[in-house]
Amino acid sequence: MSKKLAAKALLIQAPPAPSAHPAAVPGAKPGAGALDAAEPRPKTAPGSMAHFMASQSSAVREAEDLRERLKAFDGAQPVRLLDPKTVKPSRWANRHEASFADAAFAELKAEIAAAGVNVQPVSVRRVLNGSTPAAPAYELVFGHRRHRACLELGLPLQAMVTDMGDRELFEAMERENRARKNLSAWEQGAMYKRALDEGLYPSQRKLSEALGVDVALVSKSLSLARLPDAVVAAFPSPLDIQFRWAQPLAEALQKDPEGLIARARQARAAQPPLPAARVLALLVDGPAAPVLNRSTAPAVAAQVIARVGARRALMSTDSDGRVTIRVDAGLLNDDAQAQVAAAIAQIIEGQA
Image (cartoon, rainbow, N blue to C red; front, side, top):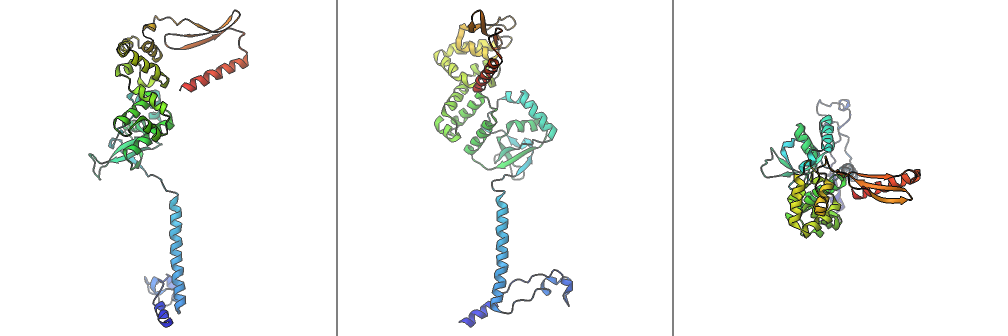
């Protein structure tokens, strides 16, 4: 039996290794270096087996090394330059047209124009309807303002192409916008409302759980998005509507829907247009907050917020919604002024 195994082992041969200097091999012909200049083969069965295993181990080590190097690219998405005309907005796009006409968009557009491309790529997915393998079409996941800027500038769009379903697209878009903190309260609500109307989630609670968003915030956002069109149109822009206005507007709608619509139309017709804070006051308080022409409207009477003897601290609001705090001399030292400034900043940031 051992003789048979030895005979079989003799049949195992390692591939010849090319010589580094084929011309140095006596009798070597041009072009024949790889075979004619091969290293001498082992003459025993164990030697042949060892040589074969050594060559195999080298190949295995090389494959392992390549696998380790490829791990650095796990999850990476290729970035491509696309024609922005082949990319359409998401079906759940949450950007109001006013978002493409403000100073922030103009600044973004200028930055892209200077760079010649959107430096931060958008995310898209392939769509099949109306496209062919030779001319694919894409749907935005996020980056609607960057896409619009490139479209208007006639520049290529730098994009990451991904494959994802509807719910994955919606959640990726929501996370991106929330991370940037540049969606208005009404836009956020419109996005949630569309997802629920399309049946993407069965309830507000399931939506909030999937997105990791507090259910109360989802409720406020939806309350704003479900306001009648006439109420939304009463404001200079839907982007001016704030989260904290959801409850008083919802209460006014429930209490007197017809009256709220009438006051909204009155506010809409005011000339010159009213600032958002005045529109809110008119909608919520009704006749207690009459619509005034800002050119002749007096400032609201000052409210005393503190008094020490004859010295007072007053707060007043003018017809444009600007708030002024006036403190008589001697009431606040330098430390107290710093505390007041910090308190006001904390209040404003808490409402943002």
